[in-house]
Length: 250
Image (tube, rainbow, N blue to C red; front, side):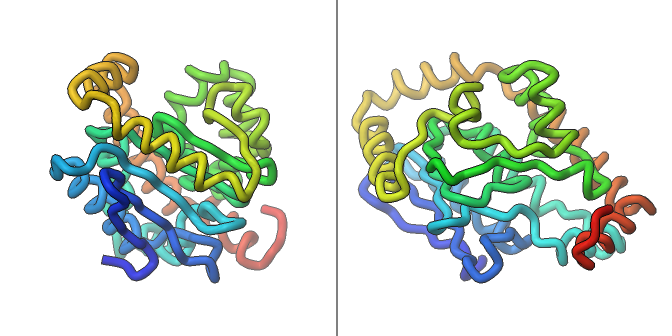
């Protein structure tokens, strides 16, 4: 497990908090493993009715820790921890409510595509600089974002790497609501409490009908995973990472 993932039960709510503020909540392999385990444990516990995923003030997540990306590029790891978490996220049996404040980059942005309700603050921007790093979109985002935003806005976000402010994300249907910084967690927990108090079986069936089959999504997640692994071993990815680490434009 990871010290940077805090798990607590708040009544019927399974709270998963990313807490690595000194690194802007960049996610390591150990953090992915801890989050996947927390989701599966909550799904298996009848006392849990809702999952909540939060970051810290100013940082939901800066995305993958680059040191772990280097491990994949060198062949030291296949990064299975990342993709196992994404599968757990995509197939979570209970409602997911998330709250994002400030930095939401890479998986810190695409994670919310799998949530049933996401609240963000006005200072939150969603960014997916995958192509700039010589890799491709992940978390099923290449399937989910075009379906919600349309081709050109999705291309701007996922390929151009343009920032998507919280208000625009709400208008495009990627998140549920934009609230003040002090209101973020109260709003998240109020929504989670409402869900936890609904009839469990009706809630489960309604959610499954709305979300639909996970087959195509899981297939896309696996396809993206293979492309990410291959991309990380490419010369252009090495050059992009070197430029990023040197604070130069790729």
